Length: 571
Ligand SMILES: *[C@@H]1O[C@H](CO)[C@@H](O)[C@H](O)[C@H]1NC(C)=O
Ligand SMILES: *[C@@H]1O[C@H](CO)[C@@H](O)[C@H](O)[C@H]1NC(C)=O
Ligand SMILES: *[C@@H]1O[C@H](CO)[C@@H](O)[C@H](O)[C@H]1NC(C)=O
Ligand SMILES: *[C@@H]1O[C@H](CO)[C@@H](O)[C@H](O)[C@H]1NC(C)=O
Image (tube, rainbow, N blue to C red; front, side):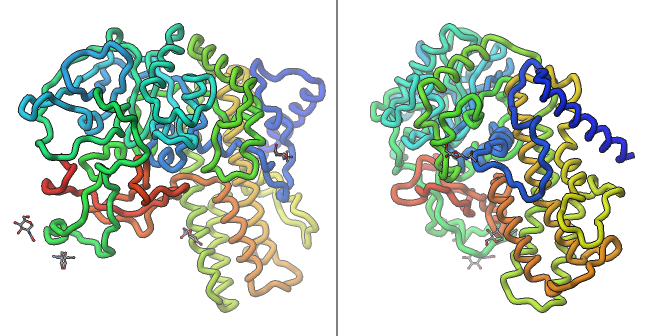
């Protein structure tokens, strides 16, 4: 069954090479040159140091999810989407009037309540319920684009709001929303989607496309600290711009190491501080993981990525040698910036049908297929640090080999057999290649390819580059295990110089860590050990507590998710 498939792939790739040589365009949107030229199946050839396919892959995999976008605050994508009719959104304010200028909408009332205010304590406070009466057209900025910080979170929206990156305007929220809506005036765009402690929508016009109803709610008791200026925009009367630090909202304290199966009042009564991330205040945590907040439906056939090195070549050198957490758009060339803005303006006008491929599901599938197994392999190899006997090492190596086989099983062709004492790993290339192209060969080689939009082509390339590197490393590890004699039914080495398996394990460990660092999937960022029922795993986010948590690379930890009425700031 598999044999003809491989033959077909080989024939097709040969055909591709011929077409390429003849310079015949393969499709209307030939985007990435690397993709079709990629015929190198040498296990020793890693991806280029400036390759960004894995970053496209992981950012697309993270859209509209709170967790990954809290870690990587500096967004690199702008994606058109819609908010379906009937969707209910919220706006807290000091009166019942419908805004006459652009304002911020919360996707969850827990967020907008921070801005619900009243004239006196017994007159209640005002929340506007804003319901979409038709599909609202939005542009989504990924990352934490509503975190009022100067070091990159706001870069992508500034490109539209100011025509350049302006770090010193990070507090200028009123001006920013006005500029964005001014830019959007002649386009088919109703608003913008950003994220901070939750998702929010900057809506340009409250008189069209939405039904606005004012609700008078019970206000928070007097004497309670007011809301911080951290919500959607800021309070209607708050003149002080949002600050980087909020004293009113405290990040949660460390929790004691013991865990309880039942509610423990003594512990609950103890002096632990409340926090902004307790269940009361942190609706963003509901949209943490895939698929995230699905009330905003993105159109991946029209995304723009700043990791697209053909669209934005000037950022390649800006990113060079920097950790991903430091990637930002500062330093983009004026030409690239213009190209991007033009492109977005174009994309908001047209609506190409695209190929119909479900990219989000495909990406998710690949993550599912490999994330737990790679983590398992890493976990086993983590134990190699302590000295082990040769027999213990052998058992460990065999256990790892089982996982490697499991990952490669659909690609282990019966025709692929090792020659005795092979001098290279070339014989294994068909496995590497089938593993890499399994999800994409039909899309690349059929008529479907001509229907891909440039954005889809970019995603396809991201999937290809990511899968290729996973398959390269895993196939390479598996072959080495086989050559070391771990699968005697298939191969018996004639020399057994390395019979304590130590160097195999060391090399496996290095490669596994290298691959997982390169992939950098957010599914691996979690609290260890897992948090108890009364806790939640928390990743420090803007607004940071002064002096605390404000690290460049936020680290997850368990915090309490229950609050007490006694605690300041809870109600
Ligand atoms: C918890 O605090 C309340 C009032 O602050 C008190 O009435 C109650 O006895 C306390 N419970 C425990 C178990 O300490
Ligand atoms: C509740 O927490 C307190 C304080 O940590 C502890 O001393 C006590 O044993 C706990 N009670 C139960 C029933 O687990
Ligand atoms: C990667 O980008 C840097 C900075 O632009 C450049 O100096 C380097 O040669 C590039 N590396 C490759 C392999 O193209
Ligand atoms: C393996 O060890 C590293 C630290 O060296 C740690 O970060 C990682 O989480 C461990 N992996 C597993 C699966 O336990």
